Image 1 (cartoon, rainbow, N blue to C red):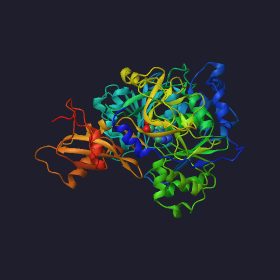
Image 2 (cartoon, rainbow, N blue to C red):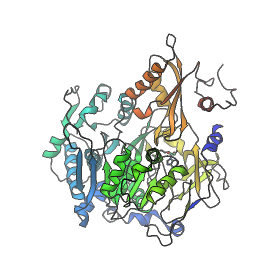
Image 3 (tube, rainbow, N blue to C red):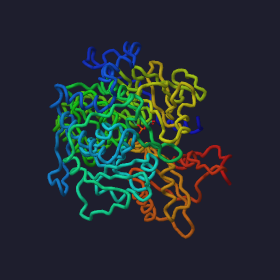
Image 4 (cartoon, rainbow, N blue to C red):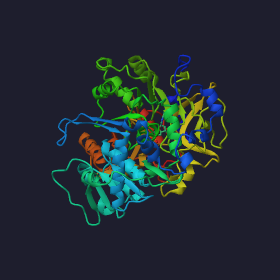
Length: 600
Ligand code: WTA
């Protein structure tokens, strides 16, 4: 491990032996973790799926059609609410879709895609705000056996180009307001656009070779019946682009069999049951928003809430009250943002419907955990996992006592452990690499078009290396320590420093840029850039703002540095690698350590 690991770890390790105790006999789906962990086999979970008998595989059958053909058909699968007024919806949007409605809608959109030549194995990007159309599109794409590539609405041209060109998406479902960001001319594979959103008054010109279709008109005139295209368990399910510490974003491909993992974790870690109203606050542009905003809950036949628009503490509380949300899956930054608005606001709402809360994406600090517990009576339960793991791996469980600050224990059927760089498991309370024994159902099957990158994760035989550092205590609880590499987690979103640096150096004033994650009380980390200027440009607050705006305009708002510091030179090794370790030391006012490899 690199020299900075322990230094970083020290700031994250939160020694605590304060327990959250559970009442005996609590009515959870997973009642006896210890016993189940010893006996559970994934084969047991396979029996829950129709394909186990029919051999016909398609996740849309398992999450939509089989419920639509059962007593659940009129059950609400999707509650949608976006109270913000817009030109076409002056009172906002509030809609309900049953499983039968989703079968109908996703079949229609599947037929539309089929009509325009989309077929099994194709990649179709979905670049939409959180609207019902976003969810229906993903279902329609999966129904046809194609792979959805969900992209968050925040992405700008550069970020879109990377992802659309790498995936060679043949179609994009988007909204007129987002269209100008798509660099059609540089995307020869892109043939079709489906526009699902309010029409832009300005209209748009579609360049030659790309056909634009009105999503709503097409869907309305399409047939509402389309049997799923039957697949094998190894065929594609979804591709998520995510960031590493080097290079551009990479496409993580999951296979259909991942549904087994989504289903079982949604049942045992999220503890979802038929009567729940479940709210996963993540956008499907991030893996949490598909694994646990789509695949997990709907294979279980659960009612889900989707809230459109931006974060607002008041709106979030209102949503819990209005929909009587019983299970809530969110992130530490969100809890801290709510906390920063104070308890007075929260107390205006009735939050008594909540019975279970889980957290993901970054470490949940004890203070935020206690705050949520004081407010709702429920301690948020940690779930640790990654885009690459596809499903939750290390969790705290509703029926199991846990220690505040710890990430929990391996999900039944998985083995997460702490290993050294040679692959040896280390003794308790020793910091090491957090790794997972290969072979769980939703382990990624490919980094799209990059075998070398894929193999890097598995360089120690039999293990998947997460890139996180952690330790296990004597009671078997895993404690997250930090990243072993330079990947940044800001407000729970994963950002690669290289991508931000590449965007920064395109600004005419920037000579060199080095980017790090700086610890932040609310967002976990914020993006900080060290920048050296080209001759003829001088440092100023205005220039800082202009540079940050430039990244917002070209990449995405969440990738823009919140803090910029100008420096004479960005420290690099003689071979030209940016020494982010030195930048972190500068930022914290600490000694920079060994600089023998630094260029003169
Ligand atoms: C971090 C999100 C601490 C971790 C599902 C991991 C966490 C990265 C936790 C993956 C947690 C996720 N406690 N850290 N409970 N959950 N992380 O791919 O560093 O966006 O490697 O997947 O988030 O981020 P990703």
